Image (cartoon, rainbow, N blue to C red; front, top):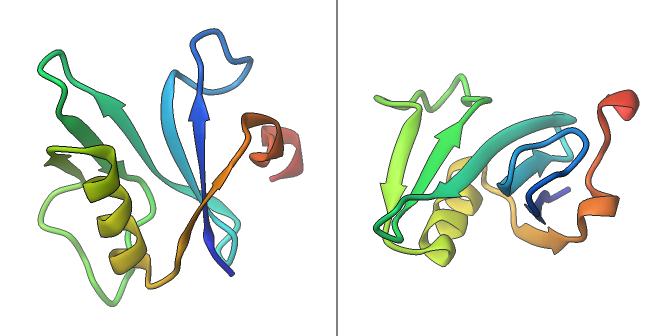
Length: 93
């Protein structure tokens, strides 16, 4: 099992623009990342792990790769890029 990462463009039918992370093991959107005006990445964890709670749900990183490394480490699974069309739809959840 892995964490799927999709870069969602503006105007997507179900998701806001940004990067969305989907945990295949828990079958849930577990995080999202957007870009600040200064180019930093805000990462919001929406599915905390009970054995490893966070002190804050939103974290800030200097790059998307740094945010992806955190997601992989926190959820203890590799992050795999996927196309927006391969990201699970609300109907499939």
